[in-house]
Length: 367
Image (cartoon, rainbow, N blue to C red):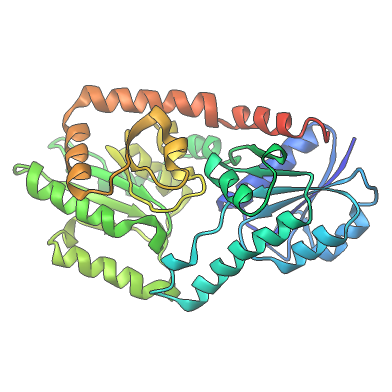
């Protein structure tokens, strides 16, 4: 059996990289390997050691280091250059800096360094490079990776736990239909950051309300935390809502609990995604798991993630998206068909059991 170190810049329970890292540890331990997480920063209570101790743990050239790449991390690059073991990159993508440049120079610089450093990692000659998606593998190849050393393995996630949770009753009462009906709920899940395309979504939603409601009502629920350094971006979104006269119909939830997130999916009539850059998009598979029909913009990995589990459009056109919202929200058969296809796609391609099979298959020669 192998000794395997899982390295990440931050190990957190409730983010996409953290879920992938911790579930990967669980899978590898189940196979009988000795597995340990390493990170300079970790949530309290997690079994995680400081990276300076990796050299004490990886003692043989047959041992394995798996680095979850999501930010610039020079110490990890030094370990890739110096450790005598087999090395694997799990690449989660880094947002291009131009999305942040108008709003925060520091964020833009972090993204720039993260994308530039990928070429340095690839130059160390890792034994294997895994991307969450075809889109991420294309980034690796553009950075100099040999295609034959690359593979696609979607990230492990916490959808199973989300489905088992009790939904937040206050959230349900606030947004679920009552005896007199209720506004249609359009949902988007994700941090309130510039690459997520919130301005496109708000414009499309406003056009949908203007052209198609005919006396009805609808809400756009934006379930994601705002970030203080990006206050200028958030303020711009709120101003856009006022200018388009939808301020009362767009709900910014800020950070919510997992129980409230489950309630958001249970009360959603449509998952609306107009992000301009996604390395995978875990909220999209969460929506599919809950049978919520999806209308999405095909950017980054979104098209490959959603597949036939939703309506996916190449054109970033508010009129097209407004019409799509109206069609799905008014056609119960279409909404049911999209939700059913999404659930089937989740089961076959993105359930943790399906991902486990892909992951162990990609590492077969190493394990």
